[in-house]
Length: 95
Image (cartoon, rainbow, N blue to C red; front, side, top):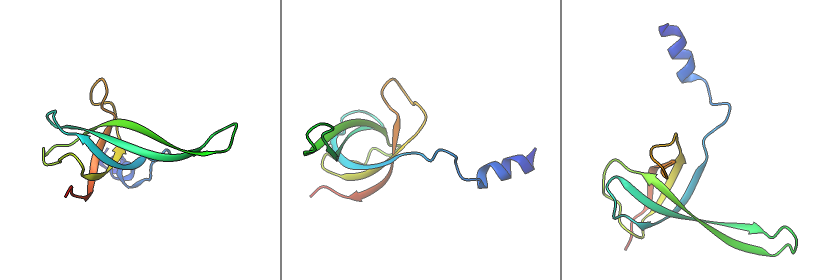
């Protein structure tokens, strides 16, 4: 059984987890931050490029993040009713 565990951990995932970058807009909860992710999308009918923002609830073990920090989040299993992401890196601290 140990051989199966080793091969499972070294294999790459068939469906890799999504990774996004965004800005922390709320850090008031314990071990949870709200990250706003902005993406540029083209309008399906008119073709105009628009900014589309989405709020993601992300898990962080250490409560060290502040509003304005730029972070990288990765998709994970459901951790609560709204939390589906976890913070992997802090790219830039708020000034």
